[in-house]
Image 1 (cartoon, rainbow, N blue to C red):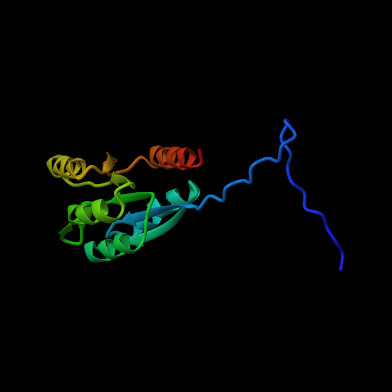
Image 2: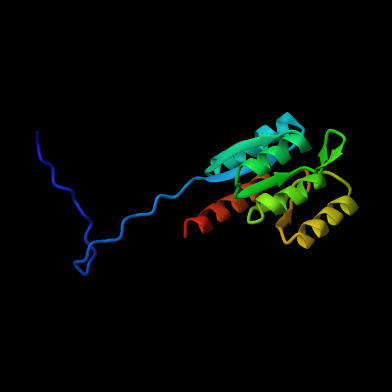
Length: 150
C-alpha cells in the first residue's frame, strides 16, 4: 500500500484555506404547452448552466412544483385551454424563492393581471412577452446563476 499525503491549500497568511463549498446546479422549470417552446427555452436554460425540468400542463406543473425546489420557473399563461396563472399559488407555497418569468403571448391585460397576482403572493416575478428575446433571457438566467455562486 502506498501512502499519499493529502495536500491542503495554504493561504498567503500560512493558514489552511477554507474548503470550497460544493454548489448544487441551478434548476429551471419550463411550463409551456408547446413542445417547441419548451425545447427552445430549455436549451437556453441549459446553456446558462441550469438543470432542466419541463411541464406541459397545469396539472403536470403543479405536481413538479410541489415535489422539487426550482431556482427559476418560466410560465406560459396559455396552457392547452387552461390559465397558467392557476399555478401561482403552488409556486408561492412550494417555490416562493424562485425567480418567476412570465413568458406569454397572452393579451397585455391578462399578463398584467397575472403579474399583479404574483406580486400579491410576494413572488419575484418578471415578464418576457412572446416572442421572447432569447439573448436577453439567457443573460437574465446567467446573471441569476452568477448571483447564486456569490
